[in-house]
Length: 191
Image (cartoon, rainbow, N blue to C red):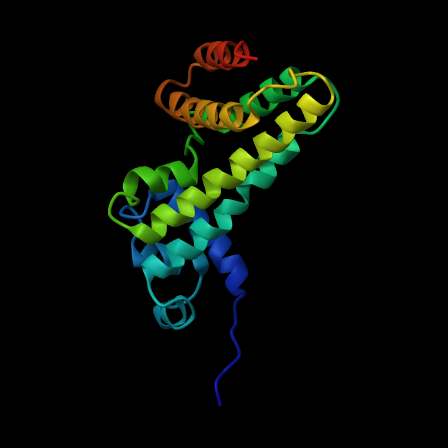
């Protein structure tokens, strides 16, 4: 009779996500995962198969990160103010030299997606969820009269997704808050 698992696989995926996000796929060893998940190698392999499969589960879990963007878009005020607040909020972690990790999906896109179709598919899904959150906000703004009735919310949401990802990279590369704020303000001038 098999022993019951002495760990929660969902918690293990969350911990693995943090390790992969901090170190990247190539920078994370199996021993790093064993240590962070506080399980032995046989449990890691028995539950998740291999490091790559665990990475894919972590990336899939991260795809739910659009919820953070949705929460950042909530609140009172006109759409431009909410978008500005949300974009700056999402870039805030990357302005800190101590915590700068960027977007896990963007990191995966750069590190693995060119050679791994599964990673590319999950990255596309994560970006699509973030764009959908922006699209919903822009539709609400158009319906409320804050955007013109002929505003192309598909194009605007794609533009804002690109802006958001660029802000995260700028934050990591420079930690220059003024540069990020200028980029946000110029992006919102498109409205």
